[in-house]
Image (cartoon, rainbow, N blue to C red; front, side):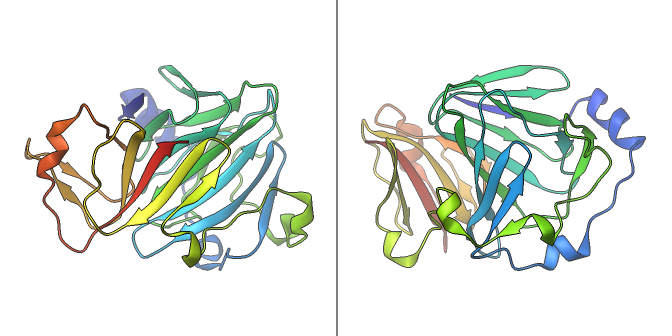
Length: 242
């Protein structure tokens, strides 16, 4: 299941009273080949191009990210393993493996791992702007603070499950029970494919709907709507169950 969430009046009212700054340091820092420690777990940059930045998150059981929003970028959250409760100011979304929520800019949200071994989440940000962060509430005292500084960065990869996406993985990358591949060809619907995410270019569907880079959409054998994808110079991430 993929949920699409737009900002509400509640989001705009809360954002208007908070300090909104975009950190130039975080926006310009090269996050490749390191892990960022978080009080709820850790995260690292998995893949990035001009259109999207894709982060790999591990959230410990019963821990949660801050209640925060991104004022200028869309975020797609895709659960790769475990169960997650994504909470906004107006609703709650329970996500199992390959469940997703697409959050438009300004939607305050928090992700809590509810499964026994925690949860792994893929976070796709469009455009890549790591400094675009507004924290409203945080169980670890980080409200009103920016993105983590260099003292929380680590290159001791033995402490983490660290699998950055590499060119050799483009045709197939597997994590737990999920398979992901990158392609510049129109995906073919089948019974295993769950969703696709364009990571460059946008897509025009037969319904004349446009899907932007970084936006997760359902895709499978029973969705002929996507037979008429029209796009040029695009790439997809394709998510399937193993």
